[in-house]
Image (cartoon, rainbow over the protein chains, first blue to last red):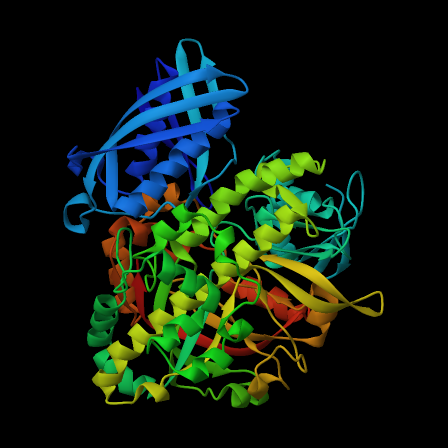
Length: 140
Length: 482
């Protein structure tokens, strides 16, 4: 289980990986929040529930990350821990998740750049060998 | 990719395949080179391919245009301009992007560089303290859905009505501070909720607030119309529609994907999803964009007020003397009249990373700028000059009255963070006489002057090709980053 920040001229790509699809999605979210804050400083004090539905896994990934950005702004939270459940098949995928975090604190979280949006550019969800990967490019 | 030189600063990508019009790039050989390298190197993210994709959209008129600051974007290239026929054409999400009406407001102060230089540290501190910036920052306004709807309908007028600014600010803003056709109903509840605490915030990334000195005037007539002179202090505000605009982009990326399928429009890149202009989906997106434009106008108006609150008491000057020079956006789609094949027509112009730059005589210009054309602001970096240009008749004929908007990145944020440290950059800038205040050290490293292309190359190509004209050069004295 890991995330990686991908090189990209104007913005930044993020790639989550793990032994399950769910863990790859959770790691992609951690990667996205790692661009915004020091994840080690973020305590799991509050949880929000997220549910999204899409036709493809790629769209599901974009919607999942975009929903987290919306919750960041609406609730004023920064998240560092995610538990994701995905069900479905091509044509209809659903994701239900919990995201844990706490109110953004510029002093403690070393807040960095604000991710504006999640793009479809380079979006990919795939299984290579035994590992699932979930990646896309973020607009900063 | 096939391309031919039309002149030293104009290149054509001939019409081929699905292209309905040619591509036309305004650039020097030096600016074009890296774009061609991307094509030859098989780079997937490739601005010239994006010019071709835009040239294939239904109803596009004359040419798919790349401005001198062209670089890869999402759907449209950044620095991409495309005008569309009302009946045959489409409106595309990628032609506006996620930061709707991101733009620049410049305030002209009565102060000279000599007045400000000895007190620039204090001024930087006051601006840094007075204007909320950076991730998680909150504006002083706490709005509800009704309040946001008011922002979306009224634009900058929302702020002026609340005492944040002066009535004169409105006439010196694009669209007189309020874009017509905005419909709050076309904007999701989620977009509005995200904005409750973000009106009057700067954001982060490449957004900034900068105190600048006018160091060179090149066009005396235009400078006189703009009432600017050498040695004068200006304040530039670069930001957009904040989370509300980002969410509109995210929402319509889905809605317009469905519309593209419904109307059988081939999608060459996901962010190029679109809808016919004359369709319920297209009209709905246009009214959502107009609402986003107004949100950005209200945002810059509110920040302008915060700048006045920080500066006016410090230098014992009334707010009225810190006047708006102009406010102009660079991620927009607008109805405009242009001459197409010798006939004046109403067309829909997308400008992604390009400002409107209407030349002399256009009725849309504020009365006092009508004869010379309105100013446009070309942002450099924290450590380099920025430029004030204006539109030209040639620009009206060739590029739908469009202008360049900035330098564009040369190095990725990841590479920039490896190469530079925020504290070192602050020191380097201080040596050049520039005070930097920033909420995020890594953000400063990402925005290092060396991570950007030379803005002079961009300005030179815009001026040499004749699509924009040079008015003045300004140099930073203090810079506030998110």
